[in-house]
Image (cartoon, rainbow, N blue to C red):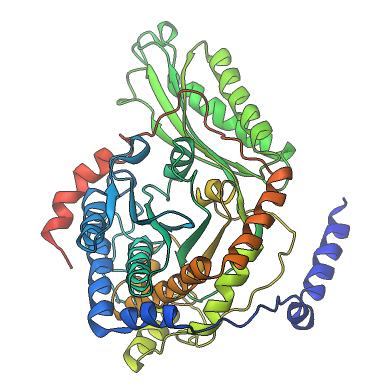
Length: 510
């Protein structure tokens, strides 16, 4: 398509999706009932001691700020909390020491709740400070709110258990402690290990600056892969002809990949970092490695990945080096959120509503928005409405929740606590996901998830309809693992970074 024609098409789409079109796009959902079973769960979560308990847990995980597959303190804290409440916990799930599954109850239905607790590198920041001010310069930080998400999930299943006990509700509630979501690692290995085989429906959650949910296909499928080249050392000036530079292979691979972008479908995203490239300029490097994220739609991801592998092979051939290793860390699908689950979550969003923000919380939000050059409007006061999918799949992040959506009916609740206008994977998000507003957000999220889980336990017809929708969808979207044969979780990932920063972070606990 010619550029001017594409521009006209984009303008038309923008016009069509304006206020009037957006209103027509809203999905009406049945009004949720506040029955006695929900009242028990919500009453527990509304207690001041409960809000304080789980808020402090979230803040402790925020302080730990542990990177993926190194979340030993964070997972232990959540496990201990669940075991104190009578849950049976399986550790070291799917070969990952920080992965666990907590279970209470027996028999059908089996309802699952997902939770994450890993941080991001380089984002250390003081909480509720509206300008950049790291706790430990260069250290990790919770720039995606995972300190709130695992905690909200744990609060949810405990609240549901209390209601199940009081009202003799039959079934099983499970919490899936899922490490390393920021590097989208744990869920494909959990699915491969059969962790979700007996689950009837799954409730996912993610921190946000608003409260809502959605359904349909979103995000990007992804391959995370490290390419390692080996060459031959020599004196860089005295006898460079005797050497074979592995770094040259990495650089030529990157050049090839960048030229390839012109011929990739516009849905693609591609990024990389050089992990190893030699230790001194006067020695030809005999080893070098580069870490790639290859992203696209489910239908295009494997073809694109094969083209990137060819770039690596060509680089090795051009430099007379060896492509020593292609290490796939993970491979994941796009999200395929279930409509019935999203409608049920939305009905309970409307039931629970937004938290009330204090003047102090609003002042912080406005100060952070001012610092970022955003509209100074504070926190939101209204929930989002459920809308039909746009049908346009371009760009966006990736999440290994996508794996779960293809093996069990799943939808994601976005709960508040973040500041509108903050930037994800940025110091501003780390600042926002700590303290009282974050506590309120995760507590509100737990209420919605608990109410949704109770509906799934107590309304067999609703659950059956959701499962039928999923079964029909699965006919055209069967699950296929993208993990190559022999792939194992990269347990060494982030180990050196945490060993470097953990002692420094422990000295300045906030």
